[in-house]
Image 1 (cartoon, rainbow, N blue to C red):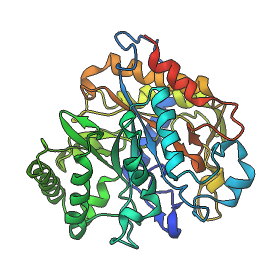
Image 2 (cartoon, rainbow, N blue to C red):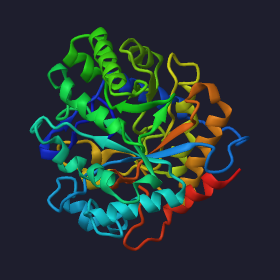
Image 3 (cartoon, rainbow, N blue to C red):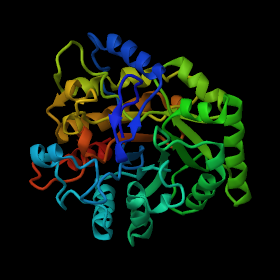
Length: 385
């Protein structure tokens, strides 16, 4: 998965390319300017003690299900050994997924938000697609009750969903919603989408998207559920939130905000500048037309996926990623939710980018020669008052 921005075309599975709305790029520019001279607000943390203070999830990207994965580039394998998971680069096996569940739960995470795919190249076998393999293994894992899950539908280029697909994908989603471990918001399963403009383009209008989402909710009710809480990733602008509301979404959120923490033209910056800008982004949603699920971008360095046709080699990147910076990111999330309880869900859900985005430099899993102990940062933050 990658940062949404129209001007950025990025490599994904089977040489498909991802393209995203201009509104996000505009939001990035605005927040970049706002970031100059920004200093974080003092920490409060009142009423946010213990594991029950927030429901903290992490995005899970399954680009690591086989050695031939296009995401496992030679540069990632050969030049970034510090990112290599302790199990090796292939992490989608029953035992490894079981181990990941235990590690996440022991650290204080509440759920994985699985990036879910409906590939253009094979609609018939989407359950078996390598990008959905870890989800299948999670569902069969004997310890899955330790960690909840939800879906983030990655409906970007190469994985788009339109009217002809709606019956099939909603049948699958409702099937998964009925799992006892599925994350609930307002008593209903939480489903997120990556992209609003793609849905509007394929369905033909915002009203048609609203009708499709209503049909999903009705299908869930027929299946014995209370409905569906539907969220979508948007840029941090009022216009993007209003568009999401017009389309019938219940909440807004994000996937990552990696280019917002730098203040000049330098390529390399300390990761604290990324962490410190978080509240500025989240505050843009404080009085928004819809509730917001805040997302902390833990790190960003996409050089392993750089090619001659994308912008990754010139992207801003961060240094100093550590358990301390992870602690700072999670504690800042807790503080913001404590200070803005009416801006988000009553369940106090928050998200981290990411559990295993090795190609883009954001991960939490222990590595082969683990010196960072990243999960210690989560454990410390979620357990503190």
